[in-house]
Length: 152
Image 1 (cartoon, helix red, strand yellow):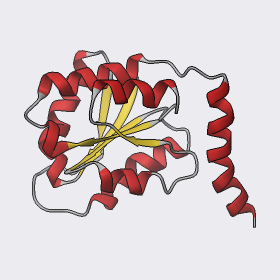
Image 2 (tube, helix red, strand yellow; image 1 turned 180 degrees about the vertical axis):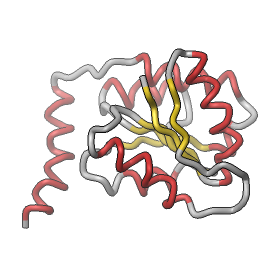
Image 3 (tube, helix red, strand yellow; image 1 turned 45 degrees about the vertical axis):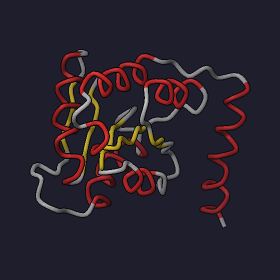
């Protein structure tokens, strides 16, 4: 699967590791920057992945910044994006199982020196299927918030 990925400077090191993990798992990461650890503004890079997932060009995406929060806030401005801040394997699994998150946002500063944990998070998220059922109703309610407001 082709997976768009992006980070700011604070997530750059963890993004580099994440790309290797994705390749090891048989996926193709497409890196939308940043390409150095020089200071940049995270929204500039989060939109690159978010727009592609929102449009349906890519099924899922990965974003990183220092805390994961900034890229998550940015990504969730898009109506078809369900971005989740993920910091453990268990949270990664649940965000897919119950929320069908299509972008995960990772705290680069927390995970850049914990490669095994980072790999476990990515494997759990990609390897978990959405449960559907009662969770469909909840996702429809979330999606209706942006659908209804954009039609007014």
